[in-house]
Image (cartoon, rainbow, N blue to C red; front, side, top):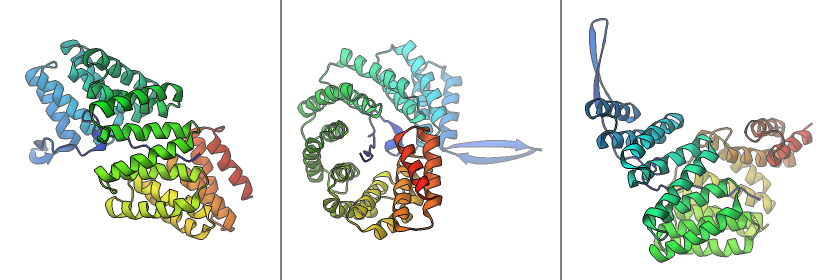
Length: 369
């Protein structure tokens, strides 16, 4: 089964998915050996200085201090300082819980961001627990049909899918999708995103025909309401490619993958996840219809972008490198051994020695000897 492409969307001001508004810019003066120099700082440094300044001026539990701390955590997430963001969010959650109460909207908003930061750090079980706390609290305070409750349920469903707790995720996402259609509208962005996740869940459960029908409907409605090159629409198109390729329909996938890759190329950077996924899918499709040389050239161009954008050891980069090694072996290319060994080393680091992806890479290394 191909890798399902997930891009979690911003909710409750979750920072990694949308640019953070322009923040504070602070001038600081440094004195060294009797000479003073003044420089302007922004980004996390400025947010951190502002947070600590508010802490000293107004106290740790003042609303202005706590909001500054929340914004500091957002900025740390935006710059990928995940461990520091977790620590700041945890501090703000504790203070807001004691001052405002554990179920106050500002407390829950911060806990929601904490759950995402924990997930990004790799603390998956803790992230799911925190997100479940947010969902349950919003159900009690706001009711099952409230938009924020539904969005919390949507995010919890995504976490459960990522944890492969599919039997728990399915009824939750069905309930949330129905609630969003009723509360927000059938073609609302959140409704369509939830339905896309539900289709992905169906695919993971082996219901590929049902997943394909649902995804085609989502893609059609997203294209109509948002446009075909909207990032969410392109994500849905990319996920539909996974279903087509996993169902062995490479010929149909070639044209769809090329169209998506072209659209993504005009709208997105070389290292954007949707564009990388589209190019990877196109390479799979080309290989599936016997156009191996084209697939090899495309992967050779795409792998460096994936390494820069995602990282050398990102699971999607490793999956791409494994496919590249496989095609090089089939073509008798002397680069095959190097790429197969690199794929195996990465899979062992990320997945461990017994993971199916590691076993596949190990089999490729044996074929190069």
